[in-house]
Structures are given as C-alpha cells and as structure tokens.
Length: 93
Image (cartoon, rainbow, N blue to C red):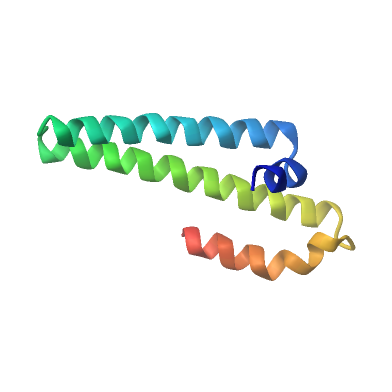
C-alpha cells in the first residue's frame, strides 16, 4: 500500500498524511494508557475523539488529493476512478 500512496500522492501530501497518522498513533497510545490507568471516562472519550478526527482528516486528505489529480488530468487513467473516490469520500463522512 505504501507504494500506491507514494505513486499516487505528491511528496507534500504524503508528508501531511503521514504526520496526521503518526499523531493519531500517539493519541491512540494515550487512550490505551488512560484505559489501563482507569482514567475518567470523559478523558478517555476526549482522547478517542482526537484519534478519530486525526484518522478522518488523513482519509479526507488522501481522497481530496486523488480528486485533485483527477481534475488536473481529466483524461488520465484516474478519471475512471472519480465515482470510486466519491464513494470513499462519503464513507468517511
């Protein structure tokens, strides 16, 4: 999958996605630690919300970057994937 991302995304978009996913990874570690330490449920839910938002934003960035590519080269092979990208976008919403 990494090669698909690298081939389909420019370096800046890939960097942003990786940063968002690393942030989510760290936040998920904090959620696990909070559960293990029996933290207040409010704190656990707030951390889970942060993880969810970070993952969603990474997904939106992947889809929006792919859509931008389709708009840049509407006659290219990616043009056939617009419907699929729309479904992916809606699955994140």
